[in-house]
Length: 246
Image (tube, rainbow, N blue to C red):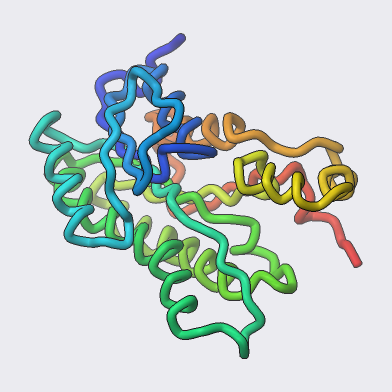
């Protein structure tokens, strides 16, 4: 295994399962020192990842966790903002609490992490931030409000910060996964007979994506191989969003 992140210190949020777990594991395999943040302890921890229990919506807890990582390892080179959650509701039936929860989980949480790691990256004159957005940030899928609002915002945050700090060595990019076989999607398929086959049929490649495929794109963006890529979003959806559907 090549050390594409050898010597780098990385933080990955939502690291207990799904895309976050795959990313934390892959980064460790490529030589990074990895701190995995999650509000839940992992059910299958990877030996190369240091896990910290922290909720991305709690700014004070995130500041403390990031400070702990920096104190232990001296620097922070990479951040992957993966933590988030689906919040779907009819607009006029959406409570103020759920509106705020959606924004806190899917947008403000990412900003809490960025704000906490930027001082270290600026001190070092380099850093790579990768935000996990969504196809919902590109295409409006009926019934997905207000999750789509937050993901549009996350892509906007990516572009704005990427330009703001480009001259100081910080790159900020995002990844927009489509349908990926994470635990909540597996649970959806289990509860809806025939849904797996229906969704698979909508994809040009006739298969559903895996967390590892997203993780490998995050690895590329985090590495020095992507040093001239900034303020950009990469779709990982098997081409589905390029096809018109009724």
